[in-house]
Amino acid sequence: MDYAITMKNIHKTFGAKTAIKDVSIDIKQGELFGFLGPSGAGKTTTIKIVTGQLKQNSGRATILGRETTALNHEIYSQVGIVTDNSGLYENMSCYDNLLMFSKILNTNKKEIMPLLRRVGLGGDRNKQVKKFSKGMKQRLVLARAMLNKPKILFLDEPTSGLDPSTSIEIHKLMLEMKNDGTTFFLTTHNMTEASKLCDRIALFNEGVIVDMGSMDELSQKYNKEKSVKILLNSGAEVILGLTPENSRRVAELINQNAVVTIHSQEPTLEQIFLKLTGRDLS
Amino acid sequence: MISTRKISAIYSKNIKSVLSNPFIAALPFMMVALAFIFHMITPEYATYYETASTLIMLVLMNVLIGGATIMAVLIAEEKEKNTLNVLITSTVSPLDFLISHVLTAATLTITVNAAMFYIMRVPDLPIVDYMIITSIGSIAAITLGATLGLLAKNQAAASTMGTPLIALVLLPSLITDNFIVDNILYYFFSEQINFAMVDLIRGGELDLLRIGIMAANFIAFALIFAVCYKKRGI
Ligand SMILES: Nc1ncnc2c1ncn2[C@@H]1O[C@H](COP(=O)(O)OP(=O)(O)OP(=O)(O)O)[C@@H](O)[C@H]1O
Ligand SMILES: [Mg+2]
Image (tube, rainbow over all chains, first blue to last red; front, side, top):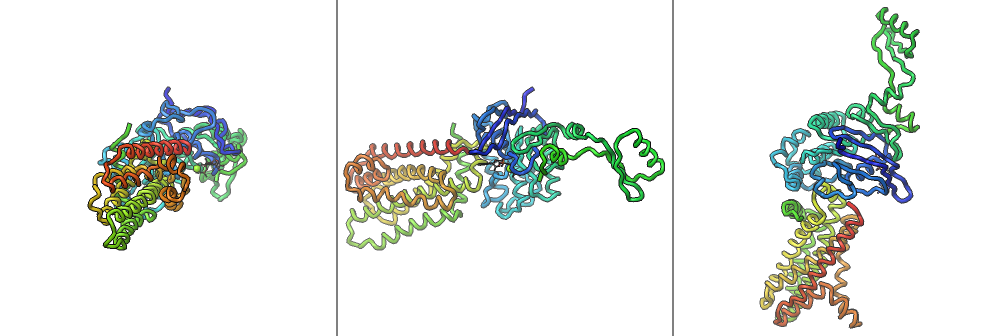
């Protein structure tokens, strides 16, 4: 199996501070992989290392089979990168920003407008970027990263600070691209985003991957006291452990037509994270 | 190796926006205005030699301060606005990046050099030779400015980094130790612009050795830039 991204025992320090400790992951082609961790966990540093913008102190990383410390600039024609330090030319129009990168990347300029419409900026093509809101800029950066139809898209907190409807649009776009085979390396501190989108999630704290797996694997693994939460007609809520005795209670309640909703009580990513690290995600 | 497509994309972006950069916009106009002022205060009876010397001073100022500052600000702007890393991670090689910006700064600087020639009206000076000397000198100064821009914290800092370069012009007349003047300063492109121009004023030919020294300056500055760039990372 050819991996899109590999990291083996990556270690990174800034002076006396260790930002990344012994991180190893292999990301398959077409996988949507998420790094979930709070501020300062080392998410951006990880992206910078795998995209060759920063050198690790030790360990090996590759993208598309090539060592990230010796990336030929041509490898960048196959990846797209969106980070919080992805700048735009603010004095130029939205369209001209993409036109310039389309020339650089040698892509068909006829694809610019459909792309702008896809990120909801079709009507703003002639507007100067300096007049854009944060969300509009973020969408333009995303459109730019999509220009060359990248094999791998690196997204560093792509929806942070955006309103919910814009975030949903971006999520839709990501899932469409994933269907077309794009590999994603997503970082986020938003557990809903991670659980909704990711095939696999690495729980990342203080430079260490504390656990890793699909949403189902993680929630099953940490679902020790299996239970259900039942909302009753009376407005009362009861939480019942999954014991033979309680199964009779549940059956009774259902027979009495007393149940409004019934939910299994597996832990959220937030709770798992708290349990593993003792800290909140935000 | 070098991609003309990428260079021209960045160059045309630069040319469209360079004069809306507040740290750059005033500079070429100030240099041209200075030439007008010197033209006006040059008396009617000034000799050809005196007028030509004023032109040398003006053009050195434009090359050293103007050229280097424009370049330093252009580079600092790409750094400050986080577009340098975007270009590099969009397949632009550091060399393509450098060339497209050198061409941008050279366009402005060389246009001003030409304007100064016409404003000062030194008709006996051969324009082609004048343009060759000042253009090569400009490109050397601009490449030096590139490193200044790389080292500058931001555009504001970069905009003042070219000014001290004028010392390169003043030093030879201030330093009395001939050894330093003859053996060190002599090999700076600024001195060579000066000497080459004096050659022309005296009716001499364009000396290829002078062009060679200026070109060597350019290559040395380009290497310094490459080293600093590598050290910094993207
Ligand atoms: N250039 C740098 N110099 C020194 N320390 C740095 C540098 N870049 C990052 N760090 C430190 O490394 C750690 C990880 O930073 P990083 O930016 O990767 O975190 P993050 O997970 O992206 O956080 P956020 O969610 O706030 O973006 C932090 O403690 C940060 O202070
Ligand atoms: Mg970050």
